[in-house]
Length: 211
Image 1 (tube, rainbow, N blue to C red):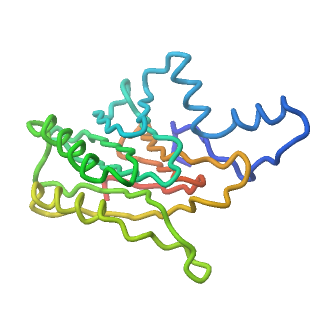
Image 2 (image 1 turned 135 degrees about the vertical axis):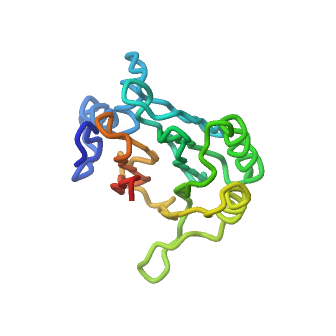
Image 3 (image 1 turned 120 degrees about the vertical axis):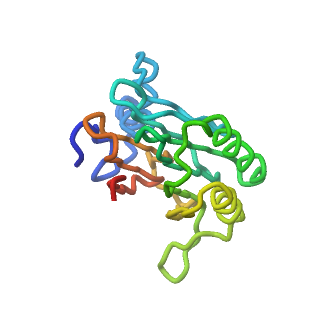
């Protein structure tokens, strides 16, 4: 665990119940539902990225520290963490249907242009792709997807040192009840260079952005 980041993930998925109230409670335990409720209750530290939308936020202790999507049912989610000239991090997160790759690339490009005066072009951004996968002899591999090459090309054209990138494929079918389909970026408000990413299926990654 990272100090200051709330634990949204569950060790075991709940099962369907004959009791409707139990099922509602189980739905509400899903990470994206927890965040949705926090947003509705007025939490300004959380930014929701809807389908066919790209958001960006400068991560600050007393500002936005969490950005998330939900309902990645075959959609592409691309996240980027970019160093700014003042040492802060810019988090860009997008969630698009797979038939609109060009629209997703253009939306990410627009955010890079909007924040261009603040971005440290000598830094090496980190890219995170959460895309549909397929079962390859018991191993989950990513379905070939042009979004990866197009986004990397976009960033390589702007950053001299290129990028680091991670591809996390997800299973789009045969999902159990109460399966989380969110892609969540949580930065510690105590140290905004400490990042926890929770991908579809509640797969956790802990990243130190100083490394």
